[in-house]
View 1 (cartoon, rainbow, N blue to C red):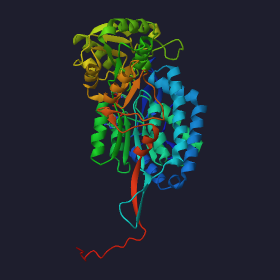
View 2 (view 1 turned 135 degrees about the vertical axis):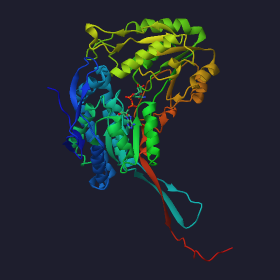
View 3 (view 1 turned 90 degrees about the vertical axis):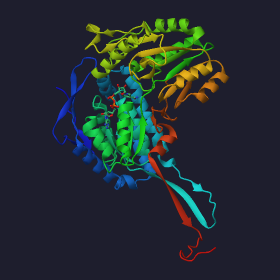
View 4 (view 1 turned 180 degrees about the vertical axis):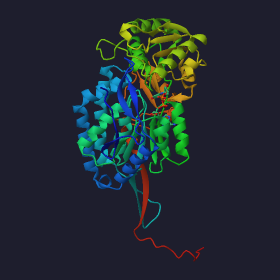
Amino acid sequence: MQPRYQLFINNEWVDPSRGQWFESLDPFTGEAWAEIPRGTREDVDRAAQAAAAAMKGPWSKMSATNRGMLLYKLAGLIEENIDLLTEVEARDNGKLRSEVRGQVGYVAKYFYYYAGMADKIQGAVVPMDKPKVFNYTRLEPVGVVGTITPWNSSLLLTAWKVAPALCAGNAIVAKPSEHTSASLLELARLFVKAGFPPGVFNVVTGFGRDVGEPLVEHPLVPMIAFTGGDEGGRRVNLAAAAHFKKVTLELGGKSPNIVFDDADLTNAANGVITGIFSAGGQTCMAGSRLLLQESIHDEFVDRLVAITSKAKLGDPARSDVQMGPVATRPQFEKVVDYIRIAREDGATCAFGGKTRSGADYGAGQFVEPTIFTNVTNDMRIAQEEVFGPVLSVLKFKDEDDALRIANDIRFGLAAGVWTKSLHRAMYMSERLQAGTVWINNYRSTSFTTPFGGYKDSGLGREGGTEAVKEFMETKSVWVSTDLEMPDPFVRKY
Ligand code: TXE
């Protein structure tokens, strides 16, 4: 019997207004395992009303310290429920259990981090250029924040938004991806257990058209925090602009991983493989463009092929498997199509390039880890986000040539640099157009530091103290200490 979920609005479990559900599929078996409520514009309205009411109720009057304590409690409950949350999320996105478990553990850490920050948010006393007046700034919550998230890391990417937004005192209407909704509904149970007042956290599941668009348009929702593809991000940004809403957008990437001839090549090879094939390449920060200095090209590609050939594909629930299926059928087809395009455009497939089916591969939604050489930067496989296990290898001559290639793209999410030269590392990190630069490592993330994109990779930053400011308005308050207001109609020259 499949579990049938309900929407979570105002701390209550409710049926979707039109009484419709859709199935959530396990990407490995290809079978439906849960029924997800198909939310509507009316449901978004119910949730937005509840969240707006929370912004006037006990939540808004709660001290920041007590708000932090609630977040702290929630973090503890996430740790206690790590098995359940892992199982549900992995069931939906098909990622390795170990990987999802690590992420859920990290979700708890996000809430701990922002729990501690809640009563440390401070405005400033501003030095004035005028006498007899005193000015200070207050940081106030924006209000109701709509979060819209994709399928690759549902809980983590939602936590990146919800933890700092709640820390700042906002209320949330969360819309998870239609492919991976269940884990967020399970998380909602923990909000009740932790003791959050009604309306502070609401989840409306469903499709982009039915739920995402109404959320972006809703007059009671002044801010949208979005992660997803750049096309979806553009639509959200355009719709939000019509209502002058605040937005943060964490979008796609085609991040360059740049390996110089003086690098520790063993470390670099491991880092490059982790950078592209973790989560089957289904991460925004995937290092999907490998830039190799000419002199080490052939040797380095051999190393990559040797490491990649050891990867075992199969049931992501098994501990001896290193790569699971592609998360959704449309995404599988998209990845397969990009492999065809790369071949047609003249790239050489140095490894992989095929799909896998048969007894070990469930419903057969598998793409081999794939390495393309002889890629030039004008090819689509070098410019477009595949969001799958496909690495494009390009050659460069020197630092400036590497920079030219690395920056000649519309994305700017992240970049990696592998070198033993400090000078080289600093030269590159200053000039790379990317929100994150990793030197002699790749794919490190932490709640303590900002993450976000340059160019078409997004707007705003998530993580660290900067994330909290994204979810706040700054109010400038002027207090007269002895300032006389002159008669407005008597001119003094
Ligand atoms: O993402 P979408 P999709 C890339 C990846 C993938 C492509 C599309 O290449 O092939 O994006 O994936 C909601 N108003 N990434 O379709 O559409 C939607 O319901 C409001 C990269 O899954 O961006 C979901 O909850 N909301 C990415 C969320 O937006 C809308 C991660 C993301 O869906 C909406 C995932 C609308 N008009 C995919 N349309 C990354 N870089 O992390 C859709 N949504």
